[in-house]
Image (cartoon, rainbow, N blue to C red; front, side, top):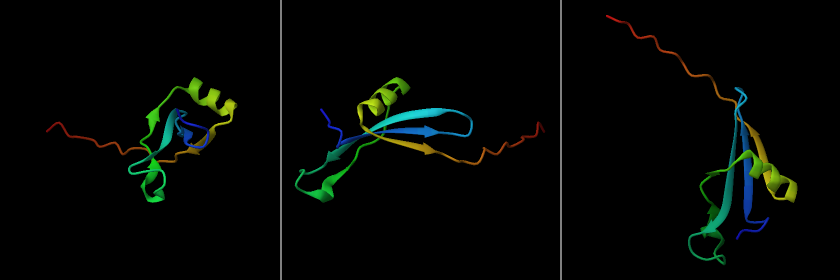
Length: 79
């Protein structure tokens, strides 16, 4: 079980209006006494309901806006 200090919740918003929600936890590859072995885990998808309930409970939440260029459309000839 993770505490409020070892977990964070992330909301990514895109210009299209899509929202993606993730959870990350602090993990260690050696021991907690070795600070060099501590890092954030891979992002795991969660629901928006979970994200907002954890935000209300006081967990650390991060809201980011991802500004990416739209994809290029390539036209292929039928020749």
